[in-house]
Image (tube, rainbow, N blue to C red; front, top):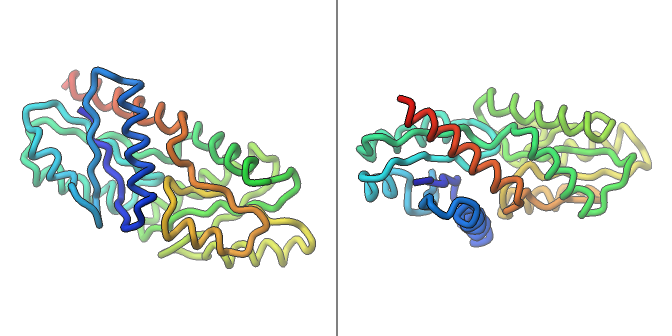
Length: 229
């Protein structure tokens, strides 16, 4: 069993993306049950789902682009609280190199042109290691685009996306600015990105086939370790 564990949001478009990802994994792996859970805000929680399926081997795949508090602390605590005898936690999504290709695809679809300044917009975290993940992705994106990429955050960390956009405009007068969305789904953070004052604002990664493939691989790696234990 895969438990796809997302952050949770009150915006209905967020859960719709998570369900689309779960449906994609079900199609890709028809013999493996896939259930959705949330680390915060929405139900069911990870503990809820695991406690209801204690007779199934379970791999919790965190649908997070960086390994911050929820991945390192909250979800492991929920796994422990569930009383599930064999649940294991897979790696988070980020900073998976293949998702950089999705970033570029979303940028191009939004209207990015070679020569545009680029800001990578992420959710933000109080966990330094999660912020390092974001900067790693920005570096990888810059290598692919052939130009440095600045980082901005929608919440918690600094600089904000709007400040990063403004700083890039000041550094490159007259140049266009594009924002790449290092977010999984629409919601409040994406709206902040859209309102940051850039010429181009890309959509979130969403239920892209590469994200679905990544979930399957995260599951397979963790399940292999579980069976070998």
